Length: 311
Image (cartoon, rainbow, N blue to C red):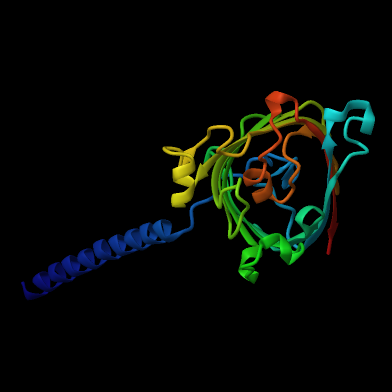
């Protein structure tokens, strides 16, 4: 009798151990599955072929450990017609720049520009990438610090070195809708430490960029930017009452409208286009276009060339 009871107790104990062992294995498997890193959706193809888009930046970046040379040129406006061959012999602006990609998703660059002798430092970082069946947008930040190296007399009697600096910040949201069409929305803010009597220190803006691919290497490109003046200076408010935040022409800078053609290869990009603003450094494009009005025919021709090297 005692033997029978002993065997029964052993069976019960072994059954309990077996059940709990199975539960432990099951829980361990679930914990392993929950702790595993989810598989990321595949990346969508690039929305743009270059990080430069006429007068603007895009979310696109060169691969890591690459060096990019940039040549940007703007001719004069077409107002003088044949006198200066529609601006080709007129006053021009030019920028030479180098961009380096030390790691994935980060670009740093330096440049020098003819007008205002601007020396600029720029940085671009991509936070998110558009993925197939996943994140619908590519989101990036672009910043630029400019130093006006022109004659100090330009800044008046109360000259300070800090008067030479300007800043530009932009968040960019891009999407590749199909293999032919991509768009980008940019929200930007420009600041100049010192400006002349007809300009404002702070200008916000939004821009829309569109790219229509028409062949494996060629695209039609279009851009529009609307500046919005932001000014808290009491003298400005007195001069322009109720326009401290304004898009009104004569108060805010003029819109910049650009239309062009892009040809791209794996190492080169060439863009030729017509635009309005003759600035090249972005804060000058956005905040200093006080004279060129597209609707009055103040249009100029420009081109960009980039060359990429891998290391």
